[in-house]
Image 1 (cartoon, rainbow, N blue to C red):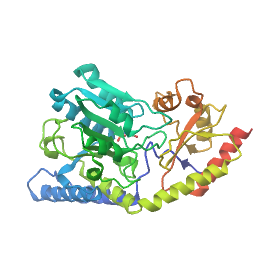
Image 2 (cartoon, protein in one colour):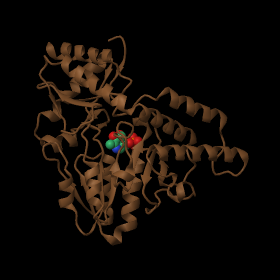
Image 3 (tube, protein in one colour):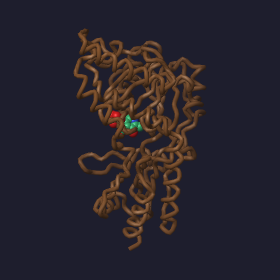
Image 4 (cartoon, rainbow, N blue to C red):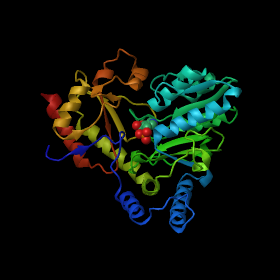
Length: 374
Ligand code: PLP
């Protein structure tokens, strides 16, 4: 192909022009430290307060529930470690699912390996995690339940509201890794019974290296020490420009959320129509975001397919982690289909954003036909 096509939006998204403009303005006009008391500092502090207010408003909550972080990984680590270490005398049992991002799974494993916690890891049944499975795993000593809102490899949606509802009758806190869902569906954590919610700006057309943690209360240990920022929960000078860019990007996304959702449903089904002649299967759940098509072509090795598409200027992913250029087997597909499923070696992730066009997906379909058809 002569044009580059980006279809790896679950890995990261291009920044929105509005977010770039807002960030640039802050970098050009505001260099003060929000903690300084002089006028430069006060101006930066005002922008920080406004950004926090705007973000709280978008989430239907109050500014004191917003903690800015460096992204999804840090938000997940902060919520899980900060809450569990503080409350460990109440119990040391954590519930999570087998399809979580590694920044949740490995953080919980760290508490298990080094602090004597015990984890129940829920396995999906028929590609679904159910609220009933969570309910059955709850114990008197369960202090935290951590589930994602939407899966990064497949777009599968988890029953967040149902789990939140169940946990209203249990003292365990509910942490939701909403990194793949924020901006794509309207989310008001307070209505959903969520105690902690993690988000990352670069997944919703904001800058990389910035995110936030919603927390229903500041009842968790500090993760970074040595400064009064973020109610002393996250020391360090705030990345004001990135914070402003993040809030602008989320605002823009949420304003067009319903249209975008519809557009992506249309793009995905049009793409699937285009490749109707090819033999393929989808790795999906019944409840599913339209942003991701995790798809396999029988007999086609995913790493080879990925490289051949890359040669044609089309960027997609296998969805699973890529360490030192070597594609690892997906723990999500393994949980869905078992360790011996050919899907683990055949599946690729096509992930869309509202910036993608029907023409781009037509070109992907044609390229796939050229590669697989011969
Ligand atoms: N959680 C999920 C579900 C993700 O998809 C990602 C992104 O890779 C993360 C957490 C980590 O976010 P970040 O890249 O901001 O650290």
